Image (cartoon, rainbow, N blue to C red):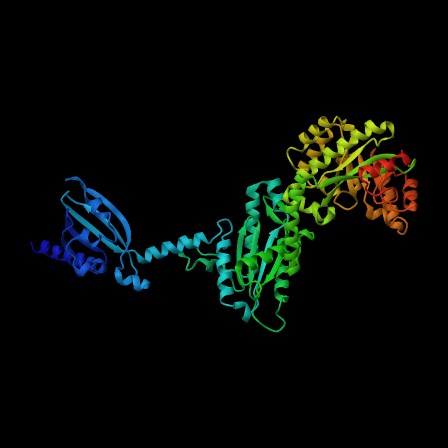
Length: 586
């Protein structure tokens, strides 16, 4: 019928004009028929421009197709679907831009004939690669660029010498209280804070919100802003690459101004489920120069400055200086030496007497760690205690001090009897207190040395005791052992006189900064006297630190402060020195 003939002609015309390659072949691959698009797509793969066998044409590009088609006679159905391969042929090797990605689907219609469908998947492949590249350079939590993207961006800008034409500053941003938020309200809340933090940084530099991954034009465009790039490096660390327009007086001023604005914005509370959480930040600033020609160097310098800002108290910005790098190298050497010192017996304990301000008799001793370095000599605790806390070595150092102090205390008890000090005071560091094995370790050392718990006083700083409920619970666990707890450096931390009754302490130690001004400042005398009175009302004993003159000791005694320690009585003494001092004060 004419209608059937017209329909058949239309079908043939459609098959020949369709942008998809269609091939009809025998089971051995011999091509019976193909449309023009199939010839166009496969011709670059054909040797000597011969398109007579599908398997021969695809032998190099898709060698497995012959095996896929070698099915038992009579098998029908899909043999492969969407199998991708490079279809540019030999010319694409010399001209990569001409490289094509083709996709092959192969069907067995009756077990004797094959139908192949080939289409150009180049654009689809490129879009997929863009999506993969974008995902690989995107931080999932915040949608910002990740460390990999930041490194690539910095490397490109530095290689281009961009910093020679306009300033290039890197701000390394690290939150000061993120771990506290994670510990107190949970990781989900912490993630929400990080997402908000990233959003604030993005908004601060006029960032355009990232497009969906499927439509991203380029991996980095999601995070490049009018002024630079914002990235999440990892954890609670972020970076901001800042390139202000050159102009009069630019220099470091715009980066400093931006850092100040970042600090202000990040110091605003994060509201989650009606709860306001505070998470200020520390910022390190480094500038591209001939001395930081690699992205790694620039990141390292900015991080050193951030660490310095954090050590200075946090919630501030500091710029990189080469002295910071020297300090970091010195700290690294000190850390390595300290690890060796713990095992090599270079640490030792000195003892500072604590005396009654009314009788002058010795009441206790405080154990303090010292380090005799084989090359550098006596290393100040100020220099190595902070490093020990940061690296976790303080747990081992603290255990050594506690064990050695308890052993020495028991030796004095045996040697001097009633003339020996009745109490041994040992400091707990910020890093020791949260350690889960602390209470068991203290109990084990007491049992090992035969020391009664009532003869041991553990001292924590005011800021440590006021940290959170978990810390106070640990203090109560220690208290249940039967030992004494002292609040050290009172007046320098977060506690108030009104909140003292909430802490499981027995002794209040008045900080030396108040004692040093007793003779010259009426204000300090009033504060110290008020502290002593409140302590007495709470049945707390008082110890004044840093007494250097007889006048200071007299004023404190008149205020009814119980005990004192300081150079007026004795500096920290080695064992032999202490034993020579003891007979005149027992």
